[in-house]
Amino acid sequence: MALMNSMYAYELPEGRTQISFSGGRTSAFMLHNILEAYNGLPSDCVVTFANTGREMPETLDFVQECSERWRVPITWLEYRKQMPKFVTVSHNSASRDGEPLEALIRANKYIPNTMRRKCTEELKVKTIKRFLVSIKWKSWYNTVGIRADEGRRVKDSKDKRWLNWFPIYNAGETKYDVAEFWTKQNLAFDLKLPLINGVTPHSNCDGCFLKSELKLAEMWRDYPDRMQWWSRLEKEFGHTFRYDGVAYQEIKNNLDRQGDWVFDIEGFFCQADGGECTG
Image (tube, rainbow, N blue to C red; front, side):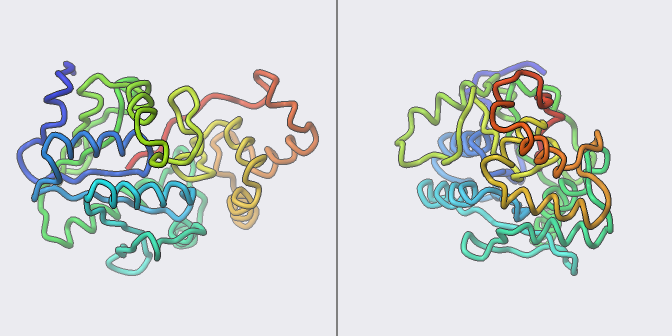
């Protein structure tokens, strides 16, 4: 795919467009650039945030602050197992203890994993689709915040209702462009999660199985109460979230036995990411 001048990369395609806002710095960068290109949100655009209930509190606050500071309406959505299988919520009423994800797991009676990523499909992709269909949209463009350094993640839509659109990728902008943008903002306005080498390790679901073993170990060290949620479900269902069969409790046990010094030993925990979750 040929890259285009960033001035034009954020010009919307013709037709209805939905902007998937994950709540991270990259998707916020994308939303900001679209708003700048049009001096606001065009009438045939909808911005959605699909909450799984396992986002960090800072992520929820960031979504709300973007909406307020940029004066852009953001539709908060959550999965429900009852028809129509979604509800609209708000910053105040959004789930904060994994309720949508746990409801999905119990409805399907199995733990999602890398090979069976039912969580992304149901909690994000289909939840947004059901909402748009409910407001009588028949076809649209799906705007996804994938950068130029994430080319492996650029894929066509499998659903005939929409076409995927990747403005950041088309502009040739990388994680360093996103990081530079946020470092230039007022320090009072930023996602209040660590930015390390252009990446926010604590973004997406707190214990997402697509995160490396190293990142999950860091979550156990820094947020043990949040990680217990994932471990509890593994024990109850007798399966692991991770494709390699390593249980979350096993990662914690390694950390308890060895101590924090293992974070200074390269290779002690697997540092390879299997990918990132996207809606």
